[in-house]
Length: 354
Image (cartoon, rainbow, N blue to C red; front, top):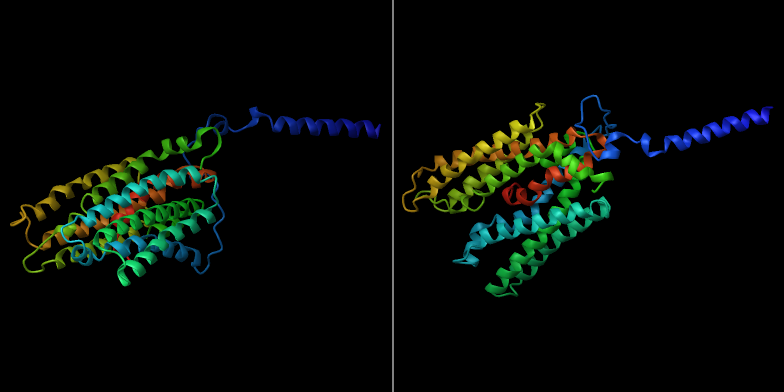
């Protein structure tokens, strides 16, 4: 009798195991590929043991390091203009970076589930720092190339740096998306089951578009148009001053992004679109060439301050808040599409933050 009862219990347990693994028991979002917006009631991940804020500052230093290679090329505007007289070297470098970075974003999103984070980050460091060292030694120091060769070499180095920095940066965003929000803020100062990436994008599309509009408007002005600013008193120091003010204000904006205020996606998008007013104002600072409509240096300096602080704030807040709109297990997926617009554009805008 005991053996028969034990046999019946065993059969019951086996039946329940089979039932629990049936497709009908899967959550609705796994069957349909749809994802519901993340609510405050969803369980939070356990916060890392970061009593001395070491992880946070490691993320902060990583965010600073994203800009170092491109910053090393772009900030010495005077050197570039003297070496490549009569060329549009700054514009060509910016355009090359943007086009390659856009391609790198697509490649990284395709490889997010095929290569580990460590692999993508290490390859990114290699691609980002290798060309910088090569150009510094063989072109700047040893001067082994003529002007035409140096021009082509500089653009090729920018392309490799763009690919490496973008893959590395995107990988860090995916990593911090799995951590509490403040770690994403530190970095700023995949394919998954039955079509989840598209489902995530449908939830956070306003945040993605807000980032894109923010950096696109800034990119129309910085560094290209600001490098053309001239003044009888300050001379070529005026663009250097305005770039420094932009970078300082942008840094402040990134710090302010950590303030605990919950923005709506539509609100962020509207604020980003309102920044279009900077376009005609900056054009009046350089046009007409001989007598600009806003000729006093106070105009471009003030506009650079406002452009920088709005760029830092509106470029960081959507990235910080977007990952919190989806369930915990989807945060790495959310971080990649949310950050994709900024990955291709932001390093160009942030040149000089070092």
